[in-house]
Length: 125
Image: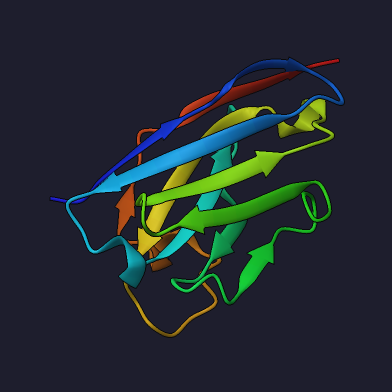
């Protein structure tokens, strides 16, 4: 049973930083592409960033490019999302997800097999 557990969310002022973590268990973590998505109230879940199994490729949504950095530590079965220069529009529940498919863009939610429970990020103005 694959489990993903996010942590690191919270309340921060605009311009501040947070680092989200997602710990995986029950799987061979290094075989999965890992992604971060977010969902604001009343809106759809949208892509934020993803990183391939070997960290050889990362991809970011335009809205976070240059401010967020995704990384992973396969030895610790953990993926991270460093979020800098946070804006009120970054407020959302952030989810990590794991994808087993070996070919893809890994931008769409339906490309991912497993999801965490989410962690709330609130950015005040």
